[in-house]
Image (tube, rainbow over all chains, first blue to last red; front, top):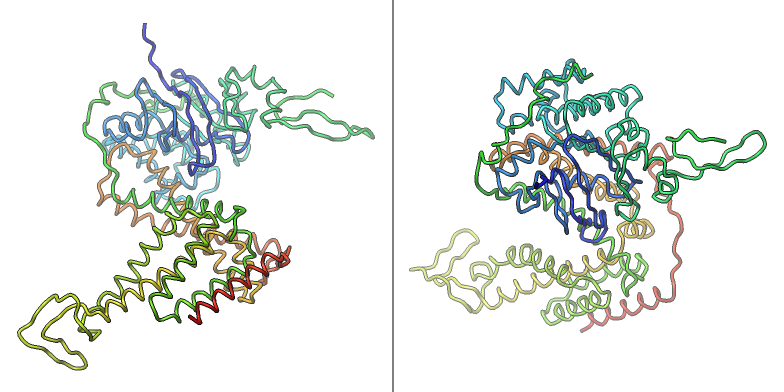
Length: 271
Length: 308
């Protein structure tokens, strides 16, 4: 039986300005409906990897397949493949500011469906339903620069949800959000996952990865995949996390005695 | 949350949609333009990288290079014969060569801008309507000559030898000035140039404007590139050029406002860290014997070029 490649990256290499390496020899395979997290320190290449997975930038070497179809600069010039790919893979940017480029929140939510040539009535229905689950109905006529950080993130997620993609790529989805909004985003991700969506997140927030019970790919600071495995396995391997700079040695005092231990803001550590 | 998920999000896309439309996408003109704008960042990076190398001109103090640039641009403007311009051009070329700069990249720009601002601008003066003289290339013969106000249109119109020499002269001057500027900018990191300008008593306000403008260009290019990527991620088909133009027109003011706000934030951050109109510098580099000797040699060569 031939197994369809859902999301497959084969020996991907990418460098900025043809000089600064961002990804070296990255190979990954994702299954439909799974929760997957790419973790790594700042500058390890997480965002670059997600952008390649969304066909926004293209690998200098290697191959990327979505449902057995190769996605590259050349193949995405095919109109039907471009449409096929875009309606199935959505990307939520780390910086919501760059993602919100339409005059109002409602325009933002309608932009994607209208691009997919969904009729206006259905697009509007989708927009209102998404506004409802994201609690942003009261913001519909506001321009994006009049929104708070949390509101921008909700609108950014909503702008992709109205396209109803199969795969959601989320770059640092909880970064810079207050605890309540963070909690909301996590719940939303879990609900979307239960609804059958494939979630791929790039983050260095280890507690988020733990909450999602995601399969994890760990990127090292030399832009290579260090390991791939279940979150319970990867997040408890302190040696490995220390090696890729996701946790650090932390010194503080217990009474009079200075004390040093590994610190990740994720583990509950013992003294 | 699960109960709230709208029904449309549970729908799967139709499998046949892959074959719905055919054809190949061509990169629209506007998109190419955005790519070129994004190249500003790449150029900036390459410039920074070449300027940080440890080669001949890169090692020289920025003050020497700024004074060299000013002195040689004056020489280029003063020299009135083609041979001297060729000698200056060759000298700058040798300097670029021993500084191991990317000669092709630099001279491609020099030729392009030299052609536009030198050759094309001066070309009309090659005709005998503007510059009288011996006609080298006859273009048109009229039945009679015409005179009105201060203008005189002769019977035979053509390119004169004197006019052509003037065009070549101006083109060479523009090209030499450009080559000098590129030589200095590609061998000196931007902050060093600003520092040198300050030390040469250029007013602080002017340097701040230059610094913020430089930063603004990169932020603007980065914002445009990022927004373009965000748009691309939600585009499922080719957008016509007219549609792209409408989008650009609508978004341009928005992007401008966005980058302006970012710039204001940066200025606030500067004020927040104690900035008050004056730029205070640290770590003044002492002139080394290499700086002195290179400065003197460049000065002597300049004087020689003025004299010949």
